[in-house]
Image 1 (cartoon, one colour):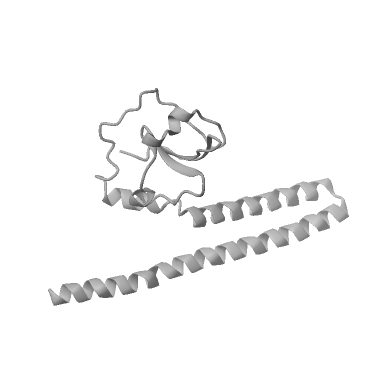
Image 2 (tube, rainbow, N blue to C red; image 1 turned 30 degrees about the vertical axis):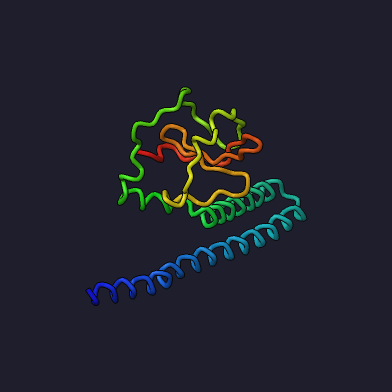
Length: 169
């Protein structure tokens, strides 16, 4: 029994050390993406000074690509977007659909649209998003179950912030 307790204690101490390089790597990726954006801005400004339309178009495209990569990396780091996927594979019982149906028909939502209050009523709120490894909701936002999907809703304005389709089995 003592060996088990010591092994568990050693694992809990070592676990944060294992997670740290991944965070450092993503932080390094963000720094590299910001440097890429600065470099692309300089090249775009030079192309504007030269005045060649083809160079301007190519540099604008490169700058937009660098900005998009930075946004995606930042969003993935902040939201921990894929943390729940691996966890779901090992804990299928938590994500079981069960006998759950709403009194309204299924409708696909996408980020940015406004939805009616019945779709995000309090009875559909996910009380503990951490249980499902979902990122925490910000102020005035809630994770809401909609059939097999999970929808992040700004409940004051009724706007969809994010949608994870086929979240439940």
